[in-house]
Length: 295
Length: 295
Image (cartoon, rainbow over all chains, first blue to last red; front, side, top):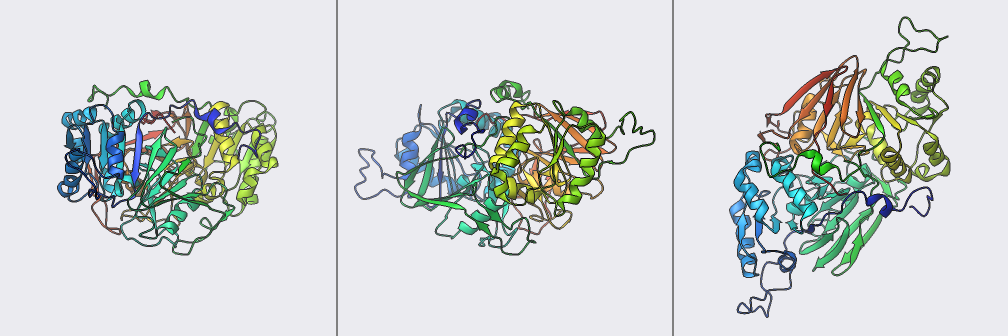
């Protein structure tokens, strides 16, 4: 767009006044491979070339990892596989923060875990649990500070990935989102802005509900993550696709029309000239910079 | 919270890496006084001590004002009163940008109007028209740049106020929002972040639907603007209340519990320890800084 609008500075000119985060995000589309592949050699502590192995490889420092089963109704079960796998993959200390109340978001022990961790893993479950329990707590504010200033790695799968960015889709019923207002959106945990992440994307046919999110405000980029597929995000906007499936990118910034503002709830919405990219392992994508310098 | 969490830097320490905007916002709760009051003297070009007079007074430079009836289904009617009143209040040139398609968001004429205006007035209507038509367009990106770097004034009333911040509530049916998922939220125009603005707030009894927005992510501050009441916002977070009614502030950051993540759609939600302030003309409020340095 800057090319068409000479008066507008190039995105990079306006983005530099805000620090890019030093932290790395790994957003996973759910059902990532947790099983050693053929050729796995426990002695050598090698491991499958999987998304979770990449996560452990990315974690710096003491490789202390904090597993966060906050989105899950069965946190112990949700955490167990990760604790075992990360340990087998050569992580340092692996701890679990099972948050059941907002009060825990300001307790010294949970903040101690946060300060000592180099990597964070948000499990699946219900993303609304993540925003309702963590939103506005000292724990989350401190994690955002560390994400901005420290080389930590924050991974999330399924609900844990959907909550990473804002806007965040949440939807009890797993419908198609073809009709206006079938979907629900709220503010996510905001490690990325103007990015809507959806998961199990191909398996559950979620492209239409993603398109409705974008129709309501085409400033947002949609990231549809298939199962066992992830994006590694550096500098807040440089994406690398990993895993066995595809990542679908929906870009509505140049869309020419939508009826979402003209139809009543319950009617099918339309949108024209939505741009779509389908990317697989090794491919890269740079999120567009939004001209928002202030908070 | 910093007091309770010594490890956390004070908000101002972390906010300074992002520029505060030079622009001023005036968010109006709808039905603002447009009639001269007793004692109005046309000769002296004086005017009622109203919200709209304050808007014109705040506009610098040539006092060129651009009226934006984009949210309205009847843009001519929506714009007319403002054009006449602003002219009578001593504005410079008063123009109208009636956007009916996203294409107009990249046309030279609309960008020329944007560059030459010192004040912007978004009328009422449907806020979803504002995000669906303006979101992601070069016009909006350029307005955000000007808001950050230039001493412009952006006013909005009713839908024009609701769309100013993010998250943005939109809701065809004017229900109470007591039941989960009765409300709908999307990304607003983002002149403020983590602030949800609702209007006609007392007249239409909208505090419950605002509380539900906050329950879904308590990082957000709710601003409920009554009719003929407004907040003047400087530096992106310093609020001054003006007008004849009250502004209701809902702060959920210290809320202790909500069931929004535990109940199915259609059931009544709960939230505990939501903080509320009711402010009237002349009172001030500073929005809390969220620890988000990057975009």
